[in-house]
Each structure stands twice: as structure tokens, then as C-alpha cells.
Image (cartoon, rainbow, N blue to C red; front, side, top):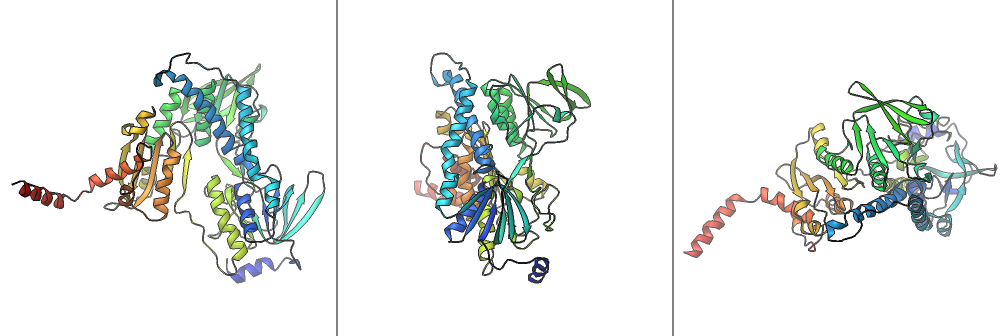
Length: 500
């Protein structure tokens, strides 16, 4: 917004004579914590408001617990593969589900100090618990658990209130105790049968984890295949692994209703025009997430929202109310913990130092990963995106099944796929499928961020034997396709002349 438009928007409100803080941050998830940390680091006074638990969804119900349960499932899977590694003995292991869930909670507790009130107050951040409501462009009222209300003021406000699982309006769904990625951690017993609605990253990860732990899992999605945002070859690798783990995948299926029948739960599906009844003990809804922007006083102040409930922001992460910024899941367009942290830097620096210089948020190189087995990691374009956007690319592929370290580890599967500009080694995007793909992608993220091409990557020494050699070999595959044929012909004749 322009300076004069900003002034006009604020003219209807009375600005406090002084402020309690330089910035008020709403939400103590990844975005809010980083915003508060940056403010404290530059000696600005920050007030951090959280209505529930410090650490937000990522620590308490998202990234951390999901990776903890995936690890337990992976270890069980390895034990069942003992014979593959020359180990004799029973190849079965019984799941102690309460112990698995205790481990999940212990992992959360071990990480909690990183995001604790004690840590942030030690850094100089004022932490407040309660529901936050904006009452003016500079003021926030906090309804505390004890019923007390407090009001705080600041020159700027950062909304980092995160998102929650989206629950579709399916008839009968509200009549059962369905699970979401928030509530699945409250399970005390392993479900005999589990139906997972949603074959995106969250649905695929939890479907595989519960299947490996012993549940009979059915994965349902309206999309024609799992992981629809990824290339078909990447999605196919995950599909085959899910099926090998016993997951029944019903893609292209629409959930029409949920019914309770004499103690049994049934999901009514429509697949290819046919109706199917799917009984289940537990139903996990994982069809997406919705930004937490309700009941915060935003509409009364004219803060505009998108159709998906995220806030309308400009290139500087400023909302339509000039003193209010947003970052993380409430701002979009990517709902990842690492992009929330990334956006937090821009939102905080812009609101604290925007009088001198502002920075446009940079989404040019955004990586992400799905932590199934195999993992799928991605940065930049994939073939599907390039085709939809009509961007010409050259595709180079290296099969990890040929990599020495992957063979030694019994994980010889997957691939590295690099998209480059035609006749150039400039990297436009990378998809990696396989063992530790989420770690391998980092080298390409660095290369893309700093403009390094495949030639630079190929000339970098990689330790042998490591999985990282897959990145170098992928670059070598590109080089083979672009070898200087004319020069090599001359060199061949030169060597022939030397021999004679």
C-alpha cells in the first residue's frame, strides 16, 4: 500500500501516546518464535502471545511427533527385514503401542526446552498466555485462562497464529470421534482398522506408520493418485511402498457419508460411479489445513482474508492494515515449518526497520519433503509443474539403485531427477526419491540459492562411500549428455598421432 493510503486506513483510529512494546507477536509456533527471537536479538521489546502450547503444531502435534512415530515404524520394519542383512532369528516384533506413544511424548518433552517460556523470557521476550484479539491497529486484548483480560500496545503486530486440520462437511462425520493430525496422538490403543482420508504428505506418512505398526490401513483420496503435487514417478514409488506395507489405496474415491451401524462405523465411498461401504474402527481426516484467522477481530479492522482463510499480504508480508504483518501458515502460500521461519525474518525486519529499508519475501528456492519410506524431497520445478507452466526443461536422471552406499545399506532404490534449462547447467528444480532424500536435497537447495550449476556440483569432491555421491553422479549424467563432441574427436586424433 502507498504511504497516503496507509495514513488514510489508520486515520479512523486513535494511536496510543506510547507503546508497551515494539512488536506484539500472536502465536508461538515456528513463525512466532522466530519473530520474537529476531526482535529480542536486535534489542527490540517483543510481547509473545500463545493461547495453547509453546512450539505450536510442529512441536506438539505435527512435525516432531509424526517423525517420532515414523521412526518407531521404520525400526520395526528393519527388524522384519533382518534376514536381508544376514541376521538369523525371529523376524517378527510385537508393537507395544502405549510404549510407542510414550516415546513420542518423550521426544516432544526433550525438544520442548528449545521453545519454552523460560528460554524466551530469558532472551527478554514477554510471554503471555491467552486468546488474542486485535482491538485497534496497535492494540491487542488477551483473554487469559483465569478470565482476566489484559491489553497491550505496540508499534506493529505480527500475526503468526498457524493453522489447524481442515475437516470437510461430510454428512455423519460429526457423529463419530474422528481423528485429525492434532488428535491422533491421544490414541491409547493401536486401531485394528484405520481409514485415512487424504493421500497428501500427512495422510501418506501416517498411513504407512500405522500400517507398519500393525493396523489394517485403507488410504482414500479424491485425487487420481497419491501425492498429486509430485511427479507421477515419485508418487508411484510411494504407492508401491505403501501397498507393500499392506495399505489399501483407494484413489479417485469420493467420501459421501459416514454412518454408525450397531457400534460399527462405515464410510460410504463413490468410486467409478460405484458405491462402496468401508468399515473402520478409527477414521483419520488428513485432507488439508485451514489458517487460524477466525475470532481475532480481523474483520472489524478490515484485515482482508483469502478464500482459504489465509491473510492477504503484500511482498513485504504486510496485511491490508499497514501496522499488521503476517507470517507462517496464516500468510501462505507454503505451509511448512521452515517457510514459516523464513517468512518470520522478513516480517520482523520489515516491521522493525521498514522506515529505513524493506525486503521483499523471497520464495525463489523453497524445498520440502514427504517423510514416507521412500522419502520424496523436492525443490523448484518438477516435470508436472514445468509442463503446466509451459517451461522448457531438460531432464537428467540418476538411479540410486546403482549407488555403492545405497547398495551396502540395503536401500538401493529411488532416483535423483534434475531439471535444467535447455543447453544450460542452470538448475531449475530437483526431485529426489529414496533413502534420506530429505538430507540429500540440501546440496541442490544451496546450489540453486547461490546460482551454482551442475558443473560446479560435479567438480566438488564427495566422500566415498556416501549417499551424497548420488548428487555428483546426477551432475555427471548431465555432463555426459553435453560432452564436447568436436573437441573429443580432435583429442582422439591427437592420441592416435601420439601412438604413431
